[in-house]
Length: 112
Image (cartoon, rainbow, N blue to C red; front, side):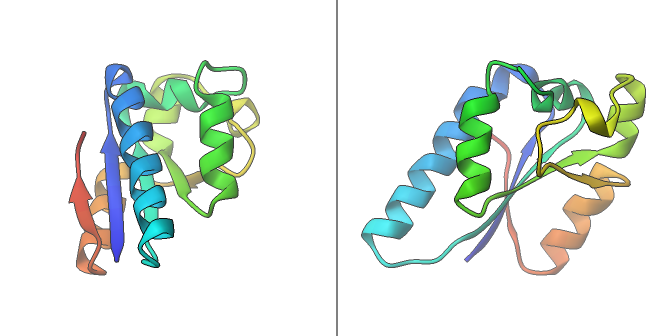
C-alpha cells in the first residue's frame, strides 16, 4: 500500500509522526509493506531543520524507508536552505504538485 501524509501546520507533526510509526508497526506485525511519504509544506518545513525537536524521530523514520519531502516553495518562503535540513530530506519543487502526482500514482492521502 502507498500512502502520503500531508503536514502544513507545525502543530500536526506529533500526530503525523505517531500515525506513521503506528502504520510501520502494523505493517511489521501483519507482514504488510507500506510505501510511505510525508510531504511538508507551508510553515511545517521549519520542523525539518537540523536540531528541531523532531529530528531524532524523523531520522528513525528515514532509516525505516519513509520518504520525507519538503516543498521548495515553502523553504524559499521560510528562508531555509538545503544545508539547514536534516540529512536525507527530499526536496520537491512544489508540494501541491507532489500531492497530485502521488495521488495519481495510487497513494492514499492522509492529512493528520
